[in-house]
Structures are given as structure tokens and as C-alpha cells.
Image 1: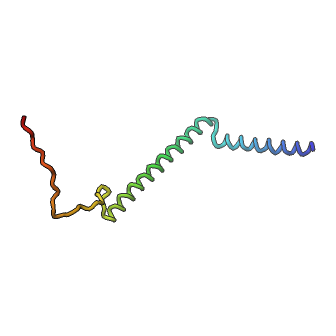
Image 2 (image 1 turned 180 degrees about the horizontal axis):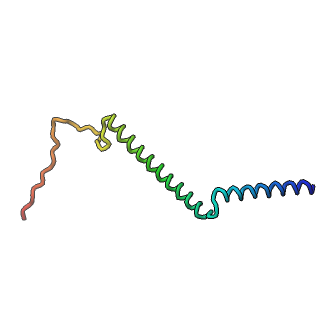
Image 3 (image 1 turned 135 degrees about the vertical axis):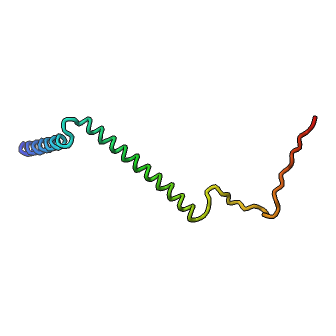
Length: 96
């Protein structure tokens, strides 16, 4: 069993060493600064993707309403009779 423990320790130390070398190669001496830069880049990319999606939705809505020919603000309730004008009650000022 001592040989298996030694082998597992050796493999683990080799993997740790490789990971440290890879991190040193990728990030250099300024690990903190690079990780912040990468996070800011990801946040900026997320904002750009969200803006593109929003613009696409607005554009799709505009084009679909133009093709259908309906305004989003028009009411769908038809008037009762087009020949009879709607009468409004007249308000007369009262004299006192």
C-alpha cells in the first residue's frame, strides 16, 4: 500500500505543478489585475449582447406591425354607426 500512496502523491503533485505553471503562463505576475480585466470584459460582452437582443426585438416588432398594417395604438373596437355623429352633452354656464 505504501507504493500506491507514493504514486498518488506523485501524480497529485505533478498536476498541481502543471496547474501552477499554466496559471503563471496565462496570467503572469499580475493575477489579480488580469482576473478583474477578464470580468469587466465579460460584463461588457453581456451588455452588448443584451443591447443587440433588445434592438432586434424592437426592430422585429416595428417590421411586423408595418407588414401587417396595424398600428399598436389603434383600438380594435369598431364605432357603432359611422353616419351618426356622437353627441356630447352641452354644458351651459349658470348665471347666479
